[in-house]
Image (cartoon, rainbow, N blue to C red; front, top):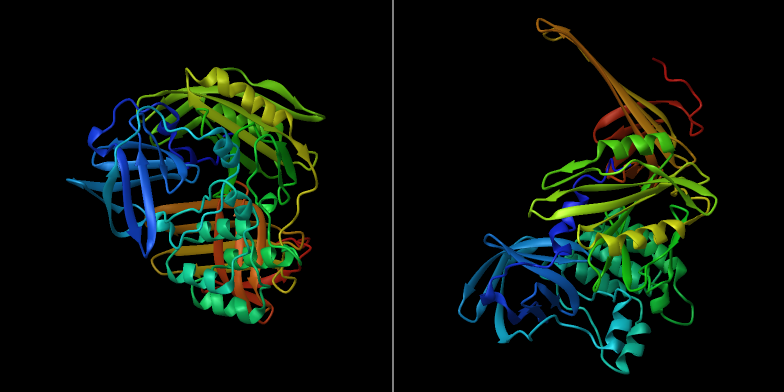
Length: 489
């Protein structure tokens, strides 16, 4: 059930779910810097909480690293304290960034006013030229909040500047989804943006935002993918909808959904497993989660779980984080009517687990399903392909790879390797599958393969007659997009 989460939990900072026991007192305070003309403010409170340009976060010192953890994940920076100057480098910062101390830290935990807390139930649009320096997020006060909700869509020139500023693709896509765009993506525009570094995923997000933008009004805050407290979150591609816990935020990262709260300890991750079964999910649960810095093993027997008419499985896991915290997790998988399964993993420190457990269960029980939307496919690219290579130098060696790009948006691939020589004989097989889409035209472009474990791979393609060349290797076409032809081996 947990197979495929890999290092996701570590990247999100498990230790940030616990209160920070010790911090470097010299860092506590308010720090300000300027990045490409934009003001950047960082508040580090004594209890390990803080804000970065208005965004709630947790901070801690680990060796010579300053670790900042927010809803977007964790980043570790080298830091050097020189009097009233704090210099950060490394991590996602391209060049050292110098902060000046502009104030002390208020005692206790920094809290929002009731009005601000209601506003913070939604993830505000990030208006930064570079995620590398975490440039400022707009957060107007008072009556200006209403104006922020009517923020116009991003223009082509704004997108271009962000690309040239080196903003990561994932952050750009988040900005596009949150703010929308004020233009329609044409072929000429897509070419201009690609020349400036736009990826196929970003072009697809821009195209979608341009097609769905309001005609007479700019995108409203209600159109943002993040969900306000207690509202339902809908993922059309998965065919999944669920109610978010009050006060929790949700966003998508690395093919998974992340849920967190500024006021409650814990983290929830929702992963989508395609074409599975309760038996396979149970097998994954029994294997546990053992990654660098985090080890969780089953602490209870699996039990049946019901979400409406959908059946599922639920269990508990326990283990330790690399920081020595005792971690406990509730994991629930629900099998959809279409053979897929969302798996929700909620974890926190053992003392906070009783508060988190009912949150996880309520989210899972609220799940409803619709038919998943298959990705856009290119009919000229769909088909069954075979790559074969053999050599007799130093013995006998052969490799054959099968790739089925089916018209329904699914793919599967497998391979066989055989070798023999003075060292003996060896043979092996492999296979994987998931969803695919294509960015480009009938002649060339990029395949986007999304595997069943949530990982994504991009592969450049070029058509050669009926065959296809993938990353320089030519695959012969032997079947069409129905994927009904048996392979010739």
